[in-house]
Every structure is written in C-alpha cells, then in structure tokens.
Length: 315
Image 1 (cartoon, helix red, strand yellow):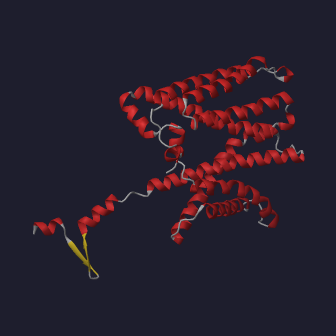
Image 2 (cartoon, helix red, strand yellow):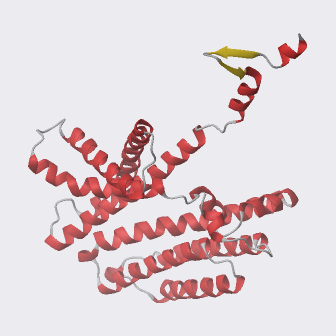
Image 3 (cartoon, rainbow, N blue to C red):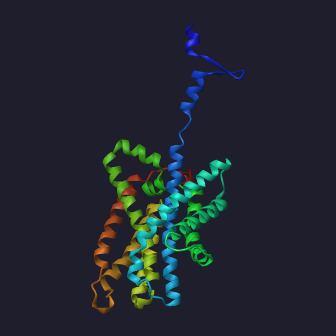
C-alpha cells in the first residue's frame, strides 16, 4: 500500500505513466519565461538601434536635398523618441515572430527573421498611418524604408546569441570570476562593476549621439566644429571598444592615455567660433574621472587566468 502511494500508476489508453515521476520531471524542466524575456529584450535593443538608424537616414537625406523642414535641433531632439518608439515597435514585431515560430513549430534563422520583422514593422506602420489617411501605393512606398530600418536590426538582434547584460555589466571579465571575487570583497567589486558599466554606457550613448549630431548639424557647423565631433565619434567608439574588449593592462593604459591626452588638448586649446563657451573642459573632467574609476575596476577585477571572450559573450 505504501509503495502504491509512493509511485502511483495511471493507465491512459493502455499506457502506464508513473505520476510522481512524471510530475517531478515536469518541475525540473526549465521555464520558458527567461528565454522569452531575453528574446524580447534583444528585440527592443534592435528596435532602438533601428530608431537611431532611421534618424541618421533622415539627417543624411536632409543634407543631400538641402531640406530644412524639420529643423536641425528638432530632429536631433527627437532621437530618444525614435529610439523608444523603435523599441516598442520591436516588442510587437518580435512577439509576432515568436508567435509565428510557435505556430509553424520551427525556429527561423537570421535572414528569415530579419525579413519577417521588417514585414511586420511595415504593416504596423501602415496600420498606424491608416488612422489619419487612406492606404495607397504612395503611402506604402514612403513606409518601406522606415519599416526596413526599424525591422531589420530587430531580426538580427533576436537571432544574436550575445549576452548583452553580461557584456555591459562585466565587459571582458568572466562573470564567474567576478562572483568569486565578490564573495571576498563585495564593496570593492560592486564599485568596480559600477565604474565599468558607467564607462561602457557613456561610450555607447556618446557614440550614438555624436553620429547623429554630425549628420544633423553638418551644414550648420564650421570646419573645426566638425572635426571636434568627428573626434568625439572616434573617442566614444574607442572608449566602448577598450572597455568591452581589451583585457591587457598595458593596452588599456596606452589607449586611455592616447584618447584622453587628445581630448585634454582640445579642452585647453580649442576655441569655439562665435565666442561660444567651450563645453569640453567640464566634459573632459567627467570623462577622465570615469576612466580613472574604470582603470581602478580593471586592476581590481582583472583575473590571472582569462577565459575566451567568445564563451563569455555568447550564450
């Protein structure tokens, strides 16, 4: 009797299934909530990138035709709106792709996903545009490129196996090594992780804003101002690369000295045209402070044995 209570057997259509064993097997199956959340998070990141590309395309197109319809400042200020709207649109198109894959019971590869998210983005834009105007061929032609710009990066990102959260939090460091060091000195590791995360976020957002600023204000800038923004693109791009990829203390030290020495020279000797105040001294102070905190975190977190970056970044 006790044995029957321990493992009861159910007969369903002639097959016998141990109920307790089957229930324990089901409870041990990993939940699907985390993969779905990761899928949608990657979709939102791809949508934000698509929003950035859309603003960049509008700015370049405006420079080519000499249009001032939107206004340079207005277009520049709409960058966060486009990125947030792109992320929200990507959540919908990503959810539709996920529903489609469950419907056909097959996981699509990168190119079919990119095509599917682009089509879904165009259809969503058409549905939104149909609220104020009739859908015709001219409207479809005007929405093709924005839909592709917003949808194609989503398909690429949801297929990517990059672990973006660990990439931004720990950069080139192995998260398992950071966890081990956290048990020994939690305060130091926490401060080091925050410093590295801050520099990586500043590098990424600085790069995105600088590229938009150059394309939007190109026709309104003097030559020296263009060169300063071009250097800012190089600076933030190099900052992102160093904070994410490099793991040699000598290379990080050399890169930090090279990037910040040029920035310091610009902060001291560059004079904006028109008698405007030079914003670089304050920005240089903040950026160098972030680099100092990052170097401190790099020295404190850098392990003696380093695992492969591919294993750290890819799921």
